[in-house]
Length: 459
Image 1 (tube, rainbow, N blue to C red):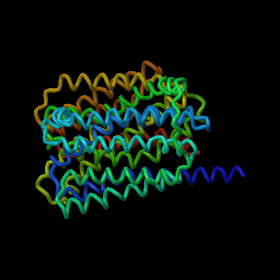
Image 2 (image 1 turned 180 degrees about the vertical axis):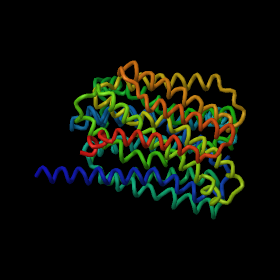
Image 3 (image 1 turned 90 degrees about the vertical axis):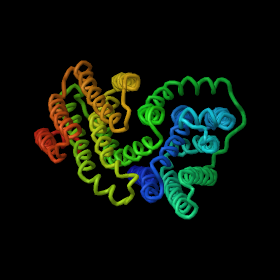
């Protein structure tokens, strides 16, 4: 009986993973299919649309939805209260977007010519809020198979809708927005069909207060994550141009997808193994976790740097030729954050989430300081300065590990310094990227020396 339960759980999680992969790949396939017909400015307008709706959605997806998963007791009262609160906030935000499109268009896009796009964002905000609670209830009930079916179905919609609208009707960035709206509507209809839960219309003051108390900390963390995900884009669109934003988001999205496809299957495995570990004060474990993530991240960056020009040439459009060098910078910028991708799992497994929170807070402060002091006048200069900041924060986070855990990932620190030398030579002096294989070789040797730790992870 127990083996059947484990098998069902494994199948559900596998389905969920496939669904998440499809959801992540869908935008990439859509962008690639229409990139030849759209300009970077079109992608800039669409990216701004995403910034706004993502900022609104963090309230229900990051706050009340997580509260429902934690607090719902099966009676449906918590979910109903969260649904009502979500809808109230969504209607307020949506109404604000509807009556003040000029303000949002001018603030985010530097022009009042995109008011219709802001009104479409209001529609998306309401549709998104309607779907958030049913999805989190399916997650709470471990109905990952149903979630995967929804994800897989919805993932095909943007491609099927956007590509014909771009090629046949020349709708440019509006085609991307219509595809996203259609996908959201179909997701909502599928949830209504698959989920047995229906919201009640009773609002409890005590339950609402409990939801707000729980959600405020989750919202704070979600806001920090939103700043990390979209802060650079907001800076680019405010101080540079829509064309720059389109180039920046396309480069960043391609790179982040590469890292996601490599690391997302490993992270759950890492946590499940780390919780079984007994000696969290063992310095060699921290050493191994940082070195292996650094080595894998550096290899991904090198791969992007080597193959980016070949891939961009396939688009066969002069408007995107600049994207090649930007992908190199974007891929190198992600190397340092991924040094610590396993350390988050380590902190949670060891019962030390406070350390992760302190490190994240420090990174947010560094990012805000950078935005204040940044003097970039071109996109490439901005990304070069952002790359330098990333390595500075990397050193600071390694220093935090030293003071908080009383051991220093010395091999990672050495590898980081070696990588900085070669990255500087490549970015500023155009030295060939293939010399990156030197630090990768060093990191590989270190990983082999620590191979005994790998046995613990694979047992």
